[in-house]
Length: 512
Picture 1 (cartoon, rainbow, N blue to C red):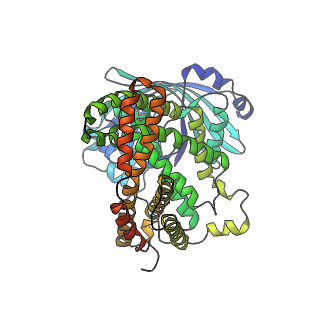
Picture 2 (tube, rainbow, N blue to C red):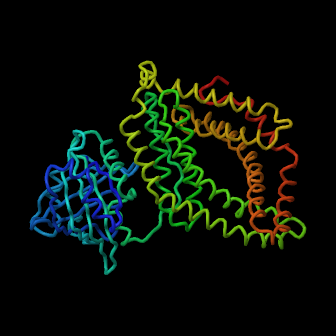
Picture 3 (cartoon, rainbow, N blue to C red):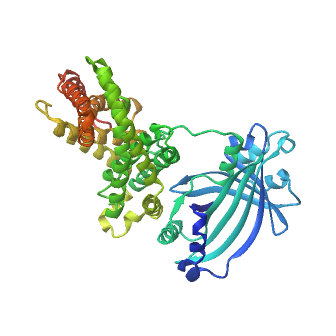
């Protein structure tokens, strides 16, 4: 299994890397430089890609080597993939030799056994790099640090490469994150979630990944509390990272929305496990910062894209709506630009590296009392049931009868209901599907009722901000605020109906 961390480096900072005190202190010798040519192969219908595999032939120091990588995944920039490698005579792959390296019966052995695969292989793209390699000893871990500079090329189109790869040769994986954090102290870096093969394939099949929703969790019914913690936190990080590139591009506001949902899920997960796996304060602060940045952009999106649409039905609303929309567009663009800047900042990179180190190295066990540490080894199911029941009771307490509840109380109730929703989703594999589905449906209905009211309250605050900045359109903004506040005072029959349905429903894991 190949384990490596990929980091993007600004070409202007190459000298900073070479002068970094850590390299001088930890390198076992001077760097080795080599020129490498890699040719990536697949069939015209991308047979290997469909099997989550990549095949290349590389020339370095006059020798040809073929490598196949497959499976695995990426978490907080840490790439883990199966790898098989062997010599070949020239610039063509030798599938017969490669099959001898694979375990018989594996899915990748089956992929290579496809009829006439050898004859259908063709070169798709090439990678030319100059590679500098340092072999490091970092706190007892053997790590290979490489600086690759060059390009990925296909049919005259070239993508520049300037990246650092930290490959673990021996030692715990968290050392890679710790090393990256120390490099980040001297130069700006960004995590790279795609490898060279994936970027090359993007030249062959131009496509933009759609905004990603949370993936279904896989939890064994005999999982321990710690195993559940790892799976849930990892699931949240994958959700966040899958939308990062789109949120930076800014071509679809749904990326920011999904990334914000991922951060909210992460914060809920950390709160769920806080008693047995306390998150460091610095990490919590940075996660709250990220949530705030994404939240601001999302709030302006909701105001412009949905909340204000109600204004169109008001007398003279269409004319007022056009004026307010024009004001909102500038605010939306500014907030999205700020979010994109934040996602490319050293603070964000440091946050993701720190989360990766904490998750990979089970950082929650550091300084944990023996009794709390033993709770991590207990079965997950009782912990899950108790957690959902506790959150459900908190929501019931905050809701009361809803009579006379103002915006602030409803906002707190919405947060409690949302926590119930996330917890039930996290622990869904441990419970009967029908129980989970009925509970989630009731919670979602309550969230929707509370959600549009919260959107109106937020809209009022944002429109107040606009009015303070733009006196010329204060009349239009005042009109919009007045209409939305009137809607906020509408009767609460729908809200009370959803609340009654939720109150009488036992959460998963509890007797009916």
